[in-house]
Length: 215
Image (tube, rainbow, N blue to C red):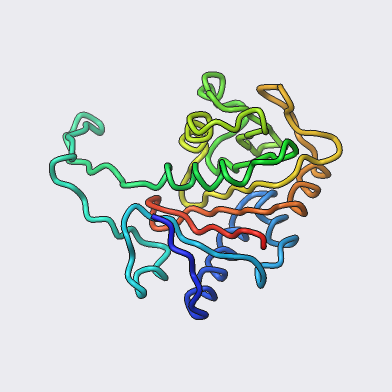
């Protein structure tokens, strides 16, 4: 569910949360924090369930009660534990990204907080990958503007405690036009950050997102 934040106190809390998470992220996150004027634009929250006016500002906690029928037993070091799957808002964020990438010059970058360039699983990744030093980014270009592709990329890139992504324009020296794995430069990241028109940050303990959109 998408809820636009219009009330001043809620918007201030959402912008503060965005700033905190961007400040805790990697290079792209910090560049976005430096480049974007968050006093303008629209702010929304995406969550699996509607949130009350008070809960909407509690960005660090999940608010969807577990469904007992969906719980499963898993084994950790040979011992059984009952695990409840986390509700999520992948479909809502997929729609936001899809609608933000109408231009052929659009590109979306998502930071993977936990991945390293040499992680074996990245060889099996479905998404395009870009590395900057020890950092890993998942990439969507305009040719990837398909909802299934966007959601696959989201699922591979999302990480806790910080998940950061943005949609902007291709820099003059374009990123990953048709390549599956590229190296990107600081200059490319700076150019992209300055062009960002949509920024999304993980919230509600993995259940949802805070979204800023230009305009």
